Image (cartoon, rainbow, N blue to C red; front, side, top):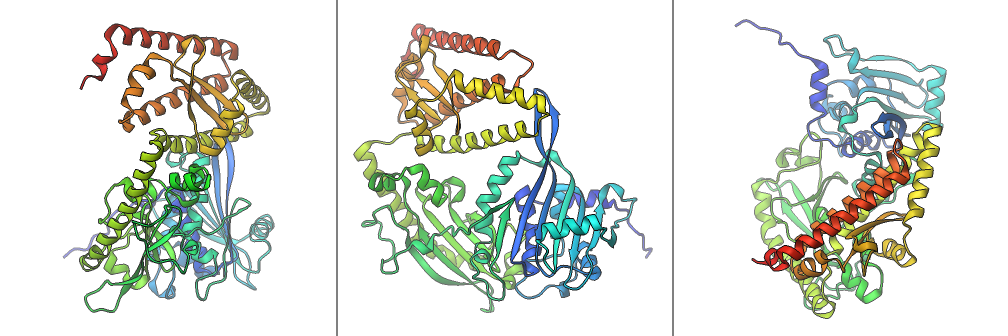
Length: 561
């Protein structure tokens, strides 16, 4: 047999590693796992922001990502191990968050083509390692040198002059893979507290309490099951007597067997979370704030799986929970350790698991009862409110539009911040003028801040326009919809039992208003006054044509089943 050395392209291999399931947030948090494993009591994520020219102006973009910690740091041997493709299992201690020895390379490669490490062990020098994919010459290689004085000063600044620690810098960013900067920051704020909550609270044996910072903001822990709110004297959830406002146990501390030998187990907990409309009805706390507090939305219900006290799977169905709004208050948690890695087939990104048949068989009876209780409890509260005050089909879509509206406002201000000085002045002026043109009323601003209402229905609009944008100086865009227009009066109001239609139209109106605002604010090569005139004429023409067309063909023609 003839042995042949196969050809390989290390740059393409690393690029492929970066595509195995990472998004920017999961990649950054995978890098943070190394910091946690190094015993850090402080981790900080920063982004260097630069700008690029795009059609219509300047857009902010990430130039570098920084992850800094005050952990044990690395000497030259440690750096070699960190940058080797597939580190030795012998280097990992029991309970570590590492798994395959690929995380740093694959996660950083998903973000950028150049990885720089500054690291120092207590009593040792600051070392600098660089892995630059653009400099590969057909071989996988990296450099290790002593850091120069500028780099040493930077290391001290990032680690707050810790005696040891590591700073990971990712540059030559793959911008095509990144969402908006505001989205990255929002997701980090939402996820860090859940992913590392046990460490932030100092509840992991043998590990110091962890301070986690995004830029300069300290991130607090979040327990997705909100167990601390459960009254210790309260019984488990009874769907017939639950008030809809309190967190209750459905199942607590259940052990399930993962292996056939009976040596490996997982712990399962399930809670029921409050129903936002019921909390608003009973306490007057706006339901939008309740949703935000308890993370109540479609993408957040299910099981949260923790491996070695670190979240690895967010709102997982575990192939046992189906899409159902009645389960929005259902929250489960599965606690496992690294002994179950092979049994549960945990992937390289440590973000997904595949349960064994044995585990599924044990979970099914537990979940059957838990799901039934949760769904029944939610449905009873929904029916109570429906009979009492009717349902508003606009609430759910407004919740999502409010989130997007906030992100859009943040991104606009960030773009404005990085623009050249002259362009910055123009953008600021156009934004202020757009706000003055159609400001929100006091009542509209209150509905926006307290209820997250981005789409607000009004009695009438000038010239019977169907929609009109308005701007709150602090919280951004809303859209007014004229409920006296023939489309709303004769068709939409007749379809209140079709929430899909209502949500689709609200989405359409908001996007029309958002597009208008983008033109007025960012198309700096066109007079703002001309933009406003054309857009107002467009709204009037569309509104008039719609009304006249509906009159001619008859609303019954459209509503006919």
